[in-house]
Length: 390
Image (cartoon, rainbow, N blue to C red; front, side, top):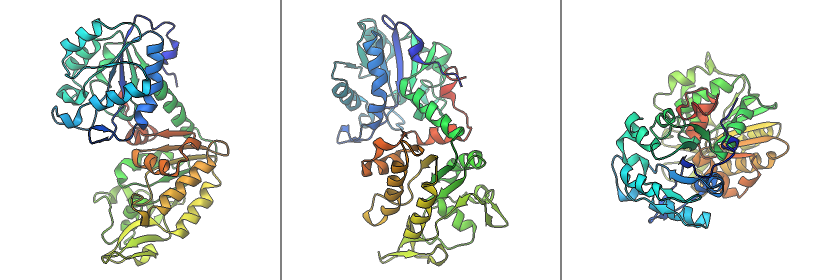
């Protein structure tokens, strides 16, 4: 794999850079609620500005259907200004003429932040005309938005037709980390939770031969239980999962490398919390966590790993009664990483759970790019990486 690294350019002074970042962060009462994604992109912003580039920072925020104050990037720009400890200018309207005028006045090392790219319909549509307008603002394109690299959108895909394109520092690290999963030190143990089987199936299929064990929990496991004819009550599942799940069974016998929970924690219609076998769940109950027996079984496999991948929570960890399984696995993955095994954790909810343990600093690579991570590891199309990776 060859990556167009921005470190290959000798001098950035005098160049204007269109830097596509993923600062799609939660806002709470008009302020940034959690800034993990901004911190991830900070190194590249600083690198370019310190090298004397004029930096145009652009991101999306949410999935707005039209311009709306609730989706404005202004609070993100304010947080970025604080983290950088240097001035920057926010452009409040996504009008190319206004942006071009501001960009023309920029001095080396200055930074401007654009309004939400998704306020323009051409962004969603990967519109060539919009991409060309964005490209006209700069000399160089840098992609620091791995989380949307599986999307064919104007600022991620089409723009690269018009500018020399490079990988941001964090994006480059992400690719190097994920490629270690594709060529793992053995044993490779994969832990998968969450809900949607369709997004996880390509990864399970692609890594099955490489993996020594796949540990399946969370709502994802409910799809497997349902296929086996077990009662899952009111538990969350993918209604269209049967055809996908079937691929991992032979005559309803589960594939040898896949381990499902042997016990689960359920909540009854009366709000009681109980540990049960998956065979004994009632129709008025809901599965919300893996049980202690399963935690022990999963832990035994995790402790053998030389390479670990975790994507998707193993229960409704937001509630105290159902956080034990997810947080215990988070601690195990962290304790095994950074030495005894190479550990990668990905996905917004998974990262949020890991952060609760305050052990995220011990994991070798923490990625907030859940969908893009799954697509990349699953061998899917990554429009954002064309002309950047070969």
